[in-house]
Picture 1: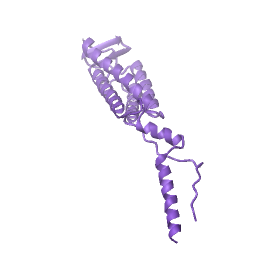
Picture 2 (picture 1 turned 90 degrees about the vertical axis):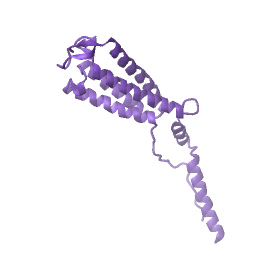
Picture 3 (picture 1 turned 45 degrees about the vertical axis):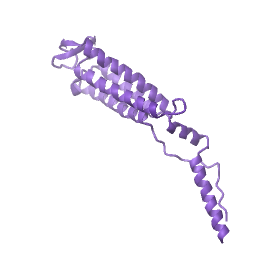
Picture 4 (picture 1 turned 45 degrees about the horizontal axis):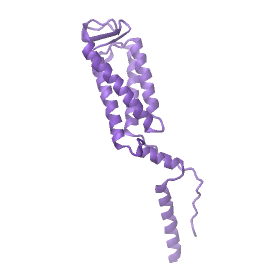
Length: 191
């Protein structure tokens, strides 16, 4: 008795996100939570979290989540390069341009590297620069890691496997199906 496989069956597969996608999801959650907590506690983690700064964090986090949950790693890679560069420039500029002073946001103590982008509306201090530097490093390292592992003109191996699955060219499953048929045929032949 031979087993016949229906080639039109829907295949379910477990989606695996790349490192750069996981980084976008993790940092996206961090940014959204920081923005939401900052609405309640303007001095959270020693940062100068004004309404504008919190909205920037929430929007940045939402974009990072969007890229992290995208079907292709390319979107997360692009966002990581852009955000990593922007956050890095903000951090470096803050340490260079920042001057000692008292912030108008969050009722905080004096800061050694206070950068008043828009006084009393958008101000960055030492802790902001440090967090921006860490975010920059995380985004850029994830992008570099993905780019180094990618093949086929910048597309990751995971994305290639997803495309193959969606197009019905899943060779791994095809080989398993063929081996099941071969075992059934061989078994019947020995009877």
